[in-house]
Length: 324
Image (tube, rainbow, N blue to C red; front, side):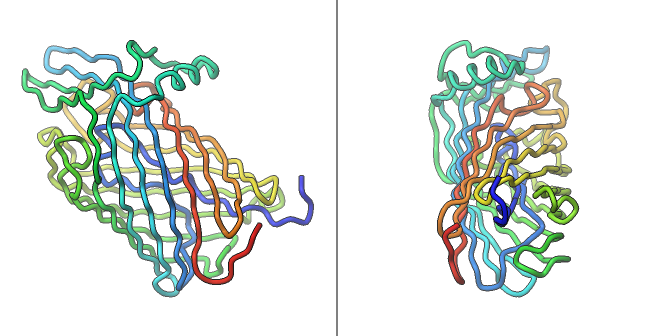
């Protein structure tokens, strides 16, 4: 371990549930309790590659099959508008196709011993849901395009320094229906989220451990994806910790959850609470740039993608820049 070196600042993985029927809503990715300082800009380029393979649910009323890959590329911007105030915007590009990650997914579950169905046919594309004989969703060919735009606002409740040992912020998000609901690149609804985000680098500062957490609520407008079954409210939360043994490295683990977005279904994919675990790390690069690499796994199979590969490049602009 390096001695006398400042620990890498720990922030949450910028992730969320990437399930095909979940990612259409305005569920915000996890963020920490410290906002961007006044006059500075944080930019993130985030890539999530989620592999879904639910097998096939077939009941007297419902038939559901998910077998495909959802790729989400997001440009996330946060600007320090004033002391204690931050504004932001997320611009996503969403792609659904057969992908290339089935082999990686199967190998990952073989190595870890985690339960998951084996891919029947490599890189197959089927997102299908039939209810009462009516085909609600049937996507069998690749589709891609801009997703739903997310606008954000943050207010610092506690922690005024750039890297305060403890910080709490209230964060709000407004998701606009700019994506195509028919191809699961958006929900067709305007959604609003409100959450508290907290970071604590003081309690275990002697061990370079940071704790963080998020708790919030999401209100969803009337959408176009399974509209008769869509709920109008969901709760969500994140708990995590990061350990920075070196000035350029932080190892992180976080647990994410949200309540179901749909009702009146026997399938876990639509009607169950989601729990997923993300593990990985942050790597400091020159000029206030950080790279996050993580793997997300569903705790209860079928409720969210079998595995999600997460990459995020974060850069801070404005003010003095240094090379770590």
